[in-house]
Amino acid sequence: MYELDAVTYVEDGQSDVQLYMPATAIQPAPNGPVANLFAPKDTAFFKLVTAGQQPGYSTPCQITIVDYLERQIAGYTVPVSCNANGYSETLFKVPTRSFGAFRIEARPAGSDSLLAEQIYSVLPPLPPPGDRPNSYFGGHFDLTPYSLEIARKAGFRWLRTWPPLLTTWIAAEPQPGNWHFPLEDLQKAVRQGFQISGILGTAPDFRADINPNSDIKNRWSKAYPPLAISDWKEYVSRCITAYYPYIKTWELWNEPDGGFMQVRPPLNKADVYMGLLKATREVVDSLGKPLTLMAPAVAAINASLGWELLKKGAGAYLDAYSFHFYSLAAGGSNPDDGFVLPLLEKFRTYKNRAGISMPLWHSEGGMYLQGARSWLATYRIPPSSPAKKQQAAASMVRAALLFKAMGVLHYFDFELSANAAGRAVNGDATTGFIEVTGIPGPAIAAHAAMVAITEDAAPAGFEDVRYHAAHIKTAHFKKDKDAIDVYWSDLDMPLKKVAKLQPSDKVLDMMGNPVAPESAQTGEFPLYVIRASGK
Image 1 (spheres, helix red, strand yellow):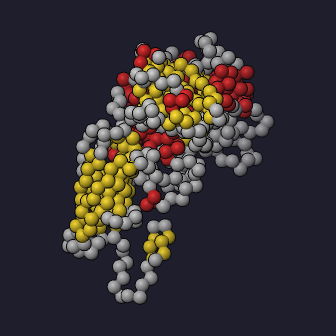
Image 2: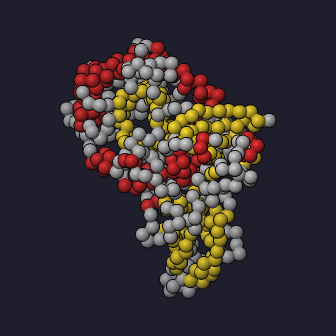
Image 3: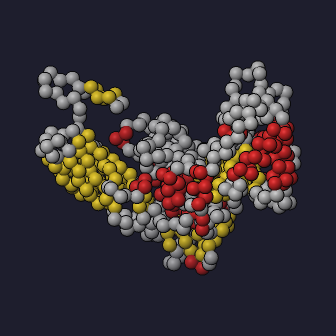
């Protein structure tokens, strides 16, 4: 037998060779929650489905359930009994007593051969996004019912429209004078309580100042600025007016320090951007609406373009400064706080238009898996990323909590769009959060736990302390009379040796489950320590 991707070719000298192999799958039970996202202690059922077997085929099947650390939490045998058509459905129950993401595995009884897998998650109940309009937590989702349900349950309160690209000029004016501002999807998201951050950027071909001597075509991902600033101001005015009040926060361009903004020689990119920023501020002020304008959405937190703009006086036109930051490694030392923290302090030496220390937004970033990586062995996706799903989840949590502890106002993870039919196998964008099947993985469960524990907590600083050969990182927060400290480290260490635990302290793992303080180990997977009365 030769297995080539989805094609199976069988060589057999017998005339009764079976051309279509039996298929086994683990499917959600009818009326199950969207994306297999359960609440604690829900009654959760799945069904083991077999098709294409011999009529009357019967065998026991072993069901195993593992958590995000590959620890078995349940196991039992279920019967498979096929009808005259070689088809069988067996309903079975899965545990929901703990938070986290879980993988269900099905094998023939007594065999190591893996037949089928499925993922489900148990998430802490969270208040709706409308109850937390100033939340720190945001993400990039398609505005579909499926994606919005994942966003709601996982605690993403803000959505940045990149994608969908509906606010870009290229989309808003596809032909000269033909303006297009679709509202329906935005209205649905806002009715659910989500806050929206929109992007002003690009220029259609007939408005753009294109370099005629370049092979680079004018596209949303490699866009040229407008030829006439008056055209830009018309676009900004029409766009903001059309989408108000659904969008009250706007960002100027996306990653202009990279290829997303093209300028023709001899123009200077910083000068072009400053011209757009000044014109945008003029339009925003003239509309007289309560709006937030931020920029420059640089791809690299330390981008030279960002510093050049600040030195040119960009703060006089800004309500907030936005940057992107991606974690490209998995270890406990990532993100590199020794690199990040001085930059945050330097940003705050600049003032915004209100004359206050520059407010900071992390408007895009998170954990890139740098290629396809699946938590499902049966999908046979070659692991081109050095980081596993669990490590991606931990890296996402560490980066978000570092920036929150340091007073960054909002944090948007990229990208989480998917649908019930799955996502692109070769797409980097969603691999850290969503499986190829379209079902959320460990990072969604870890995000929900992080929101449940820290959303209403105030930032209280960040520490990097050396303990023997290890670097112990601690993100500090205050919540009412409690202190919340989140620990991780580049080497595994007993938490009790580095955290000065008190008898009243509660320790939670990355998914929000209680951990015995005596056995807790800090490492790349963050641990939450909740200290009563601020001790």
